[in-house]
Length: 417
Image (cartoon, rainbow, N blue to C red):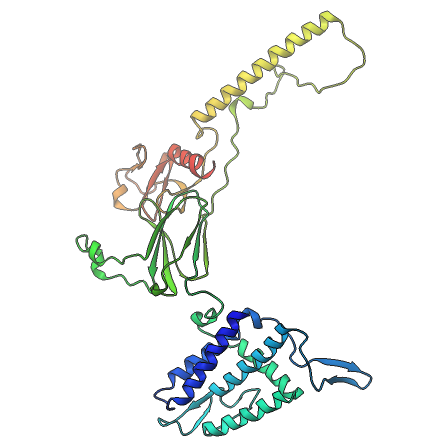
């Protein structure tokens, strides 16, 4: 409330200073910007509630307005008269000159007019000021119709379309922070540039790249699952351009960001396939061991039968544990034989890459595909339709290639852990 009161005092002082300056179409930009500031102040959270300015009471004769409504608290009193002052300022600033000397003008709303003063038409500023002065006297005398017009005028002001900078001009600090959340498993380099981001054509030349490449305002390396706040200096501006790059320098996301906004970056991860252990295959036939359910008996067994039965259970449990550990060791060594992965995430550009068995179309793959991580060479044949014996992963964006084992290891160690 103190911030809204300070802003209102500043607008009133600016309006009084504007009244002393000469009017005309040449110097009309100050009036237009001041009216935008008044409209932005109407969007302040202090005036967000839909409180009626003219209280009503129900009687036997029907619904009748109170002749002199009184505020029940200081907050309601401030909201009531601050709303009225915003409406009167907006009505006074709605008069726009139509000649260079400012002798005649009209309302910016055109033929529809305003709810408070109606359609002004073509008139002088003195005529418009006298009409507004009349409504100020009526509001001071607690006229119910005038307060209803003020309430409707306030709602009309709040529904106007404002530029992005004016919407948070009074409700947000000039040095507000911006949040970037890394919801991936990879480390990202976040660069904050001025908006709009202008790139010189000379930046494509290798020798000129360091001189003509746009300089970021803030640079930060954001790890996985980290929320990083960027708070540039006030002189840097209000809107920025955010770029997200991987360790290899590939841009994975780019968007416009203004102060007070948040950017959540996430990558859809394919689900982990169900790994079937070779040692846990379901047996069938006569040689299959029979699994017994646990039962409870009140009869005490003999000592010889109990000892023999206990030795058998111990031997069976030892064999099952060893079989299970061997199966886990086999799975850890070679997962590609147990569960084939169809989709991986490219380590460079973080896009999903599907497995394929057909040679890629670029001429660089005429001799085959080589894994960029382990160096495994996969022969594809001379024909474009000839299939390979082993599936591989080829990223069409950055031309990064992975074999089946490296792709599975990348998903297990980075994205599925």
